Length: 149
Image (cartoon, rainbow, N blue to C red):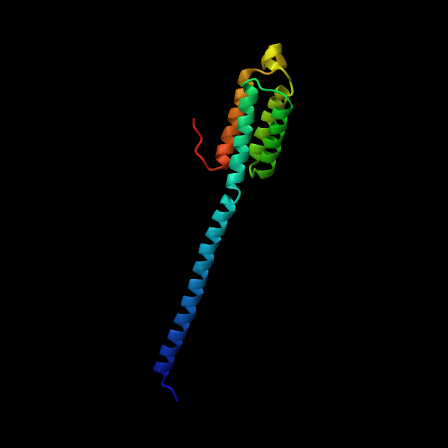
């Protein structure tokens, strides 16, 4: 028959091995969970960034006086892409407000020839600038970039 002291030592060793295995398993789950969260956050980062940049580029083109089907089509594509890839309701609301103005101006042909301005369309330049700024701030926040104040 085994001595009680040696049996106790054997059980302590067995319990230590089991506890070490369980703790190692839990630590690996924690590490994997953090990795999965980071990958999930970054998975579509490039898609969102590219969509936001495309929308801003279309806004610049329209603001510079370009109009017509091509600009409207590119703008609509950028607008819809932002709506699909964004995770932020703030970005979604900001891009809708911005697109309302940009699409109105983009569909007006021959702006410079006709001398049409934002004010002629019932929109002040300040309102357009404010909506563009809100979109850019929301996009920067969605991309975890610091906003400039």
